[in-house]
Amino acid sequence: MRARDFSCCIEHAKGEYAFMVWRVWFVMLVGVWSSGCVSDEDPHGSTAVFCEGLCEGMSRCGTWPASAPGCQSDCVERQVGFTDLSESFADRYGKCVSRAQCSTFFDEATFDHCWEVAKMEATPSESTRSFCERFVRSAFECGYGDTPQGCERDFGVWSGGIIERMSDCTGSATCEDVVSCVNGVFASL
Image (tube, rainbow, N blue to C red):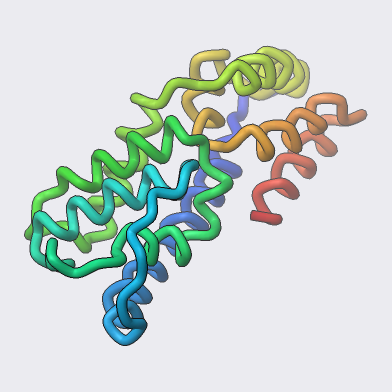
């Protein structure tokens, strides 16, 4: 069997989130100003921790005036898909974005860079570690090459609910079923 990896699945999912981030930028910068004042309550979860970093960076760079209310709550309201991310990853992602140079704050490369930084810095959950033990074993039997640490880095991006859905893939009957199952989870995001 030849060695393969699951980078196709990961890149597909990364692309989906990159599109979502750009859509949110547009909505926040155009739509928020017409929405009036909203509360800056501090909701919990991965969306809130990412939005905290995003709003801090926007305020620092002057794209969202520090005196304007609502960045955090508006961002949380519009970042629905970020609930699929682990809180550890979203926190690192938001912190990286918050430190981005103002001159490149809106560049796609900034978000790509921060995605990679957050993957390296995020702490994988116990459910991710458990999933990766099974997944790497299952993937190895199918000719895919990965280490538990590589799996934890790549799949540590996702919330417990996504990891749980992908865990079902490790019991698939054939190698094609494993790939199809993982791709199905990402396609549903």
